[in-house]
Image (tube, rainbow, N blue to C red; front, side, top):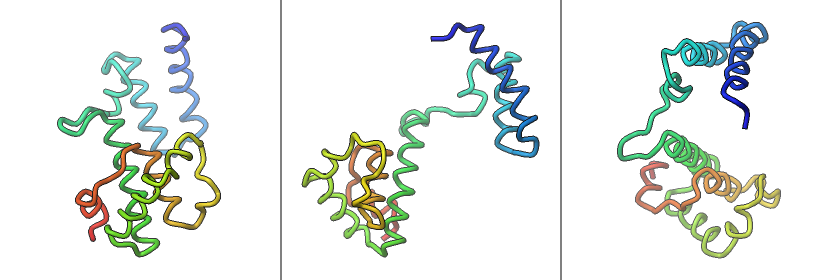
Length: 144
């Protein structure tokens, strides 16, 4: 683990170099402003400087983001393959309960066998948030 000084020096280099490399990038501006806020003492962490907070009743910001990513994959599956919430729930249940997910959850990339199929998006949804979604919640997510 690097020392605190090494980490601060790395942040100082990033704050100086990033805008020079990508001068018109809005994301770079946000990130360098956040780094500056930490280095200048206006915030104690990048989480604070970037306004990444726990959401009461919804968990940490990481959990909120993971569920949002899961929901995006599920919405995409429903839209792209014209699936109702019930049909998508069946796809998820088959994948989870018949062992597909157990075999594939440890792999880094979606298995090629799922390419172009709803199962690929279900795999990505499960990778984002490791728990399957119930039908009531799925209907809320996909709107059918």
